[in-house]
Image (cartoon, rainbow over all chains, first blue to last red; front, top):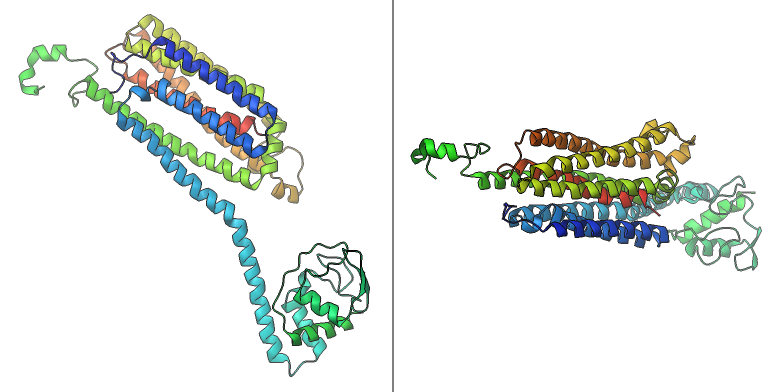
Length: 219
Length: 228
């Protein structure tokens, strides 16, 4: 029942709880000074804090002697807090993935639109013009410059016929076969000084031919 | 107990602190205490929002929280404040016990020690706050610490750390101030002899409030001062 006057906690208990709380404070500070790995450190600190919280609630707040319904109210609040924390955390920690997925999706949509435009215009435009359209439509423009600037990938300026050094040390001269391979299997060969960041994209044989023709014009 | 058969004799026996709509003092104390617990739980959920803000901001800016907390928060001051609050929690619990047992001579000094420790806590808080305000370590747009480029303000964002810091410790500090007021009021009532074994419910509930303030600080201290 609620703290009625006949249910006194022995005086000793108060001081034992107080001593335990001080010891746990020393533990928390000690753990922090030792310098555990960040995640472990937070977990330990929160566990110690939770134990301290239970000590305060059970004895200083007399929950041990209180009505069971008041205990229920108190514990229920932690249940609601857990729901709040877990769902919010799940949301926050997965936002990066969603951005990556939608980013990739948009890129593919743009690539598909570019393919439709390519087919529609293939009778009317020269291969160079078609290649130029694909250069922006398929997203090459994002990483490969036309003016010689180094971006995420090597520049297209003077690419055809250039001798490139690969990350494995081999040298090769850029020709039709290399361009085709680089588009279909972007990770097969990486030029020295660049990261393997290019994604595989849907590019047809005709489109590769048009792009190659366009790249040849970029002197 | 039937109100009709009570008469003058029963009214004389009636506890002067018993409100007319309660059967007896036990029923009244139980009802008041349950109301207090509901209030405390609401407080916990309210602080839960601030803790969630801390977790999400730390998730977005892990290095900022590490660097700013280590550079600008002194764990020793935090530790002293922790000990001050824990000790005040003990004296408050002992004050509630003294009130329940009708030990009037113990009650006022115990409440006084509790209040003094709370003032010590706020004094250290004042020292910490004025130091940070002097260094321009302010929340949000008020931040005037080191000059930040636009990129740093977005990527490193110390102003966000100080938003979280001032909001959490500020709201907690406000609770401590209210606690000091309540304990002062208890002392005033106690000196008039109005808080005794027949009427200790108010002491009991202020005690619960005070322990909750301590409980919240138990979590704030490691999260803000001991980040590594």
